[in-house]
Length: 177
Image 1 (cartoon, rainbow, N blue to C red):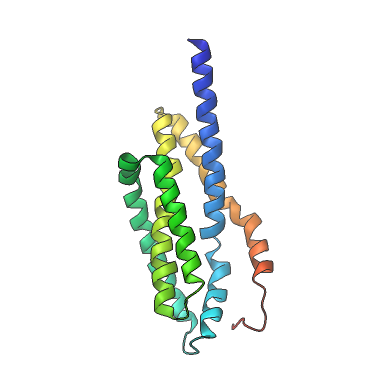
Image 2: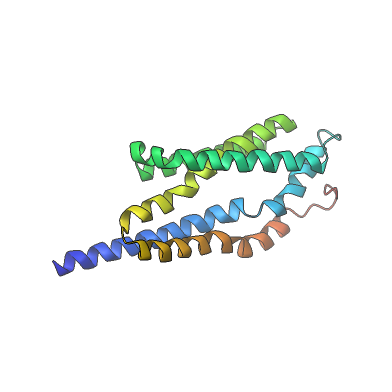
């Protein structure tokens, strides 16, 4: 039926648009790490003056490994829990972890909350739009085009977000370079 086909196409296109918006919000949080790292370390130095930017490298390493672990967990979570519930759990996990990280004073606690927990949840959330789109569009050529559109949303979001991050976190008296 022609109307059903149009409705399915419209629903699939809305899924692509939703995935693009979803990834734009995730990219704004995760890809701007280079802007956030000096602020995290400077903020933690208020509580422990022995922390250096080398600790930021450990934080990045733990974060990247945890992100990849979350990415591996995401397809099975989507399969058993569904896309919506997995998405809600992942985003709530990121939010709770970042909130908790903002209230800790020890580097190890920050590493656990932000570097490990938030990054695993971010990795889970990262795969959801891609996995959903790949199921909706079974044709390989279409999958490549749509995946490219989603990646553009993820990696172009810091263009808009990085300037606001710089202005929102501007605290020269606490920035240690």
